Image (tube, rainbow, N blue to C red; front, side, top):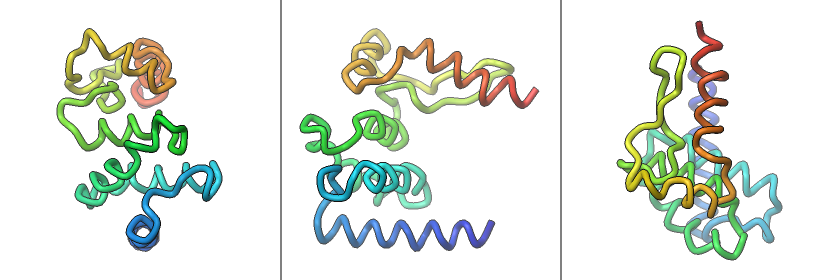
Amino acid sequence: MNEVLRVDAQNTQRLDAIMKSMGWPRISAVGRKAADAAALLALHADRNPQFQRRALELMQPLVEIKEVNPEQFAYLWDRTHVPQRFGTQGGCHGTSWVPDEVEDPAQVESRRAAMGMRPLSDYVAIASEMLCRARQ
């Protein structure tokens, strides 16, 4: 596990340097695969919330012009905010996955749709099966 943390820290440092020199890696500049990898690095950089917030700030204006995968932006938003907006973060309660607190729950489906995300009920069903029932 120490090796994984070391490599992750190196990759996060490299992404931080890229962000400082060129901003967020746009899909048109680095390709979908590299842009997705950058988003995953930012999403899982929980040991560095300041880095995650900076990544989110750089990503935000790029969402509308399709230079960032909007679903990845939504995941990072939820990972860095309480309450969350899109219902992507939560945990198992028995065999059911339940999202953490969501701001303005009546609007969650429209926010998810705007990001190209499946309905929250579908996400809950999939997460429950994959994360909660699989452990039983």
